Length: 96
Image 1: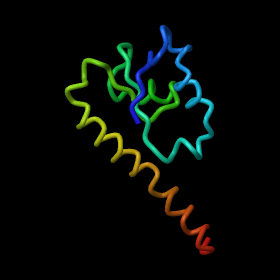
Image 2: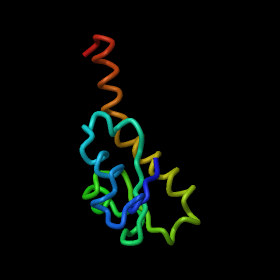
Image 3: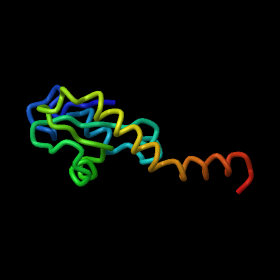
Image 4: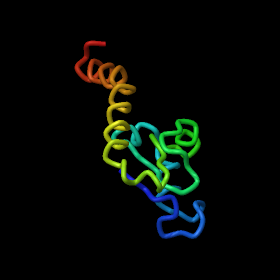
């Protein structure tokens, strides 16, 4: 999912989609990588992404590389959550 920092807003704090995402429980946010786009971000800066409660951030100037960036974000997210998903599956199957 790609969200623009100023979607339907003049400042980020007015972006209702971003505010709702920040309030969403982590177990719901895990299901789809979220990328936040804005002029003030350094693309793929993990600390900026963490601060914004998203998986990755991208600077608007890097839109030409969006496909590559999205592929990297998805791969990183899958790698990061692999152990969690395996444990969750074992619990659901009664093997843990």
